[in-house]
Length: 117
Image 1 (cartoon, rainbow, N blue to C red):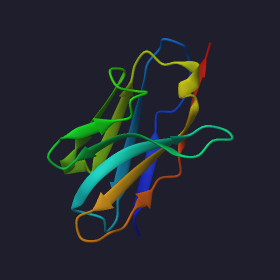
Image 2 (cartoon, rainbow, N blue to C red):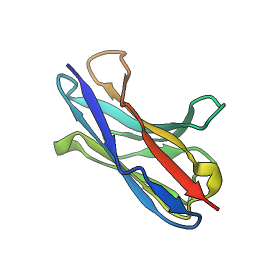
Image 3 (cartoon, rainbow, N blue to C red):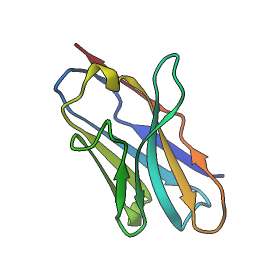
């Protein structure tokens, strides 16, 4: 059974920082890419950032220059460093992982990030 467990969500003031973590376990290795998505109340889930197994990354325009994604392949863990947070970053953040062995998407349960103005 594959599990993705996120942590690090919290309440923070605008301009502050948070670091999210997501650890994958179970029969998912080797992992191709890992990423972060978010869903604000009343809105659809949207892409935030993604990182491939070679370390190449891409970001949503709304977070470029403020967020940084990284991963530890040995631990099947992905991180999201979020700086200069804005109230509009408030959302539930979900981790996503895609294995190399098949066209499957795995999701975590989500972690709440709230940015107060």
